[in-house]
Amino acid sequence: MKNFALVKMLSLVWAASLFTCGCVVDPNAPVATLGTEVHVPGEPPLDILEAVPPCPGADFVWIGGAWGWQGRWVWEKGHWDRPPNPGAVWVPHQYASRNGSHVFIRGGWRNDP
View (tube, rainbow, N blue to C red):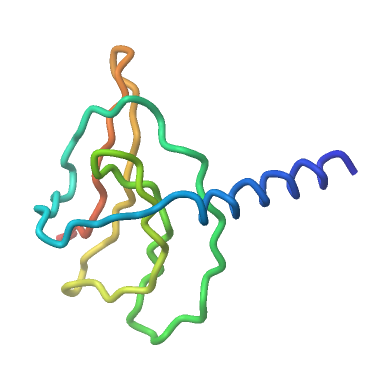
């Protein structure tokens, strides 16, 4: 029963954060490529649970929501997308700790041979 209360409380905190945190994306900002590394001040917030909508077609891939770094942590909602070409594989963002420093590594489409 305590676990249920904890889950309920965390869900409310996540929901509240959606309404209190703004997301501003500069359409003129350069797009970072796969593998770009950025030193960040700390780990990203806890992931936001998202419902996966029905797949729009057989050639779509679900890209789960994740925290991205744009000068601050910004939630990038999950979405269905088509690979840009045959054999392309989605690589999610990664976060690493190196020598006491936090690093954000941008994900993206990778072409597998």
